[in-house]
Length: 194
Image 1: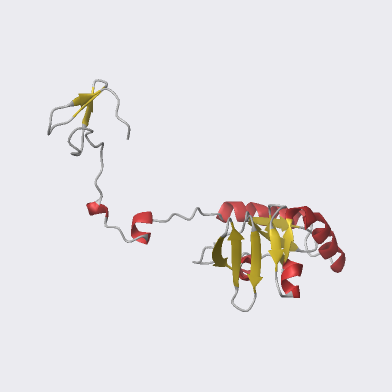
Image 2: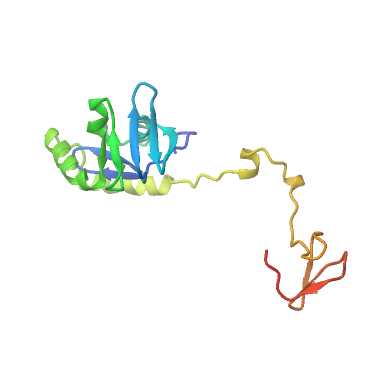
């Protein structure tokens, strides 16, 4: 949590020289990064779908992490990011060279990390600071709870709860002594599929 704002990171790697945010996507088929519209188009099983651009998402996460580190008194460190495509059979396409530097298959991650590590000569964190950041991140972690009913705009008072009677459809049946009974039609049943 950054102040009053929540942010979520799939994976965060902390090194002495930099931090690395990994936004992991489990997409199959062909994915096309459209940098002009900041979206991804996936073609899978002859179906075309659009998704938010994970590069923009990872950029936003890096800004949020930078603010969080500063607000919690940690040193300013370079924050890198990459979008990791977990399926090796996924085809990645993009007209932009920037995309190819930020999006990669999982099997290329180690060489990417090695390349980034070589580009930084100054150690910004020691082991104690890395442990402190890790500990503080875990301590400040807050589960994001969402009220699904409110989110999809359903009034809880309109919810019908209970077990439907298989004979007349009324609600609710009453369970007593291993048996369900319907107060409307008086039918009983030992097992009812819910």
